[in-house]
Length: 440
Image (cartoon, rainbow, N blue to C red; front, side):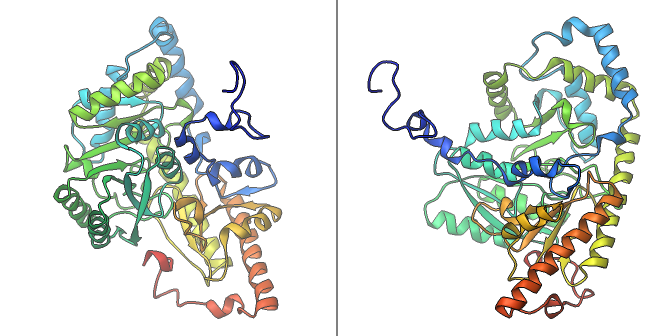
């Protein structure tokens, strides 16, 4: 400060307080997904970008009834401060939800948070020091990367294939980091219906990865928003189902009920749970008593399992529509075909750049998320994440048709000016592989 109340000389012409921010704010940046929302929300644009649940499939009377009963029967409690750990009744009910994925535990070890995103942020605050390394799949969940960077961690991406994270690659990355004297704080993973790749970690690999983590004294952070949204065969049980002390499990009601409630949770070993509660209290004092009680009332009186099954049917139809449209309009390309969740991971010909192509796509009234959003190291330019969860099947077909026009237009332009060859030149035998080249 030059004089009392005056800004420092470190400011700039856009922000007079630029020189006063903490160093860690340099890691804060808007995600490419969030940056698309303003454009993608225009009604004429078919958005295949954001992972917004189709909340219209949730009957309003179920929610309105739960809210009404909460206010009539528990209004004074619902509108008051609450526990930093969360409403006890809801924590007991969360055990019933997790039991569907093979998890057993104690309500004492559940911490309710303002969405699972909040749990991820609290966990990162507790564990990450500047310069620490976080292991994560490549690609990985975009906002997790934003959080890790905000705490000045380095993200080391471990390769995946059609069966999820590759154990041997994980061993190699850990050995390389250890030999360089780097400190690995934890492994972050979305093992079931991965965001953005859509693949699911096999049961055998879950066990092997847990063994690698135990042998190297590395904590596993298992993020599981989509596990109950399977379309056919039920996915493997959660990693937390076989490892209590070495896994912190994150869950949410955003995908199986509605994101507007902002209710998620962490299931953690006892010592970590205590610190999560303290961090929760420091951040928000207590999660919303009102939304917790509404969710608890819904779980008590509604057939929530049947409602999850309804969501499965909605998303299954939309996924099948997207895969059918890709086969029709872009048969030369490759993509994942998920058995659940929200996302398809598309791979472009090697000479196309999904990020550079996005403005043209928006001009053609279709939006997607470029693969670069899901890497901390600049990779992913050959990839696109397509979300099938929110648009109607009819809009999905229109969106894929528009996307095909954009891709073919880019290829024709390159063919004209650079001689790279048309899309037919990169045609592959679809019977030989159903996954993008970077996930094989």
